Amino acid sequence: FMGGTALTLRATQKGGVAFGLYYDLRIRHAKQGIHLWAEEGSFVNANSFHAGAVTGTMTDLGLLAEGPGPCNGNRFDNMAIEPSKTVEGHVIVRGKKTNVWMTGVRLEGTEQDEATPMVHIYDGSYHNVIEGMIGHQAVRADFNRNPGVKFLSYKGTSVQPTSNNAFENAAFHSVTISQD
Image 1: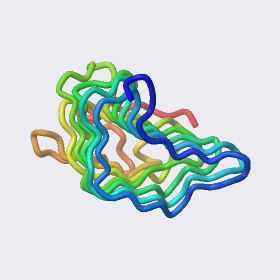
Image 2: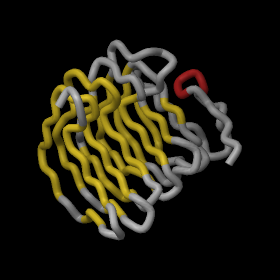
Image 3: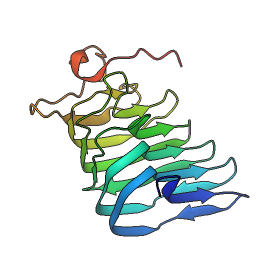
């Protein structure tokens, strides 16, 4: 997989990929780990990934969820995404109709570039839920649109800001003020 993506769920031509159930998925060594993508008029919704891991060398990223079509409500429960480093980040979410729900997730990148956040939720994406443990790097997101994004750092301190204070714990998550 080093030249491509290990697992892609792609919806095209007004079709959909929904209600898939994946248990203990193991991905090791790929350019990209998991890619969820829906073109306009199609959807990738309500797929569930339980346990498993995305580890080893991931050149570009661990998980990418993107539109422009609806790509939302996809769940990742009790997974580990922990390549030592990624070029784009471990979890990338982009698109106004895109979000992910991750609970009990473990994100770690021992060699991650300080300029690249481990989690990047692009402006426009909202209602992401990401809870778990993060080590070694930051989160870039609009926390007012994504109040369910909260992690324990490797020091055990919650990094979730209050919904009305984007600067609380700013040292942990690189506050970016959105202009949407």
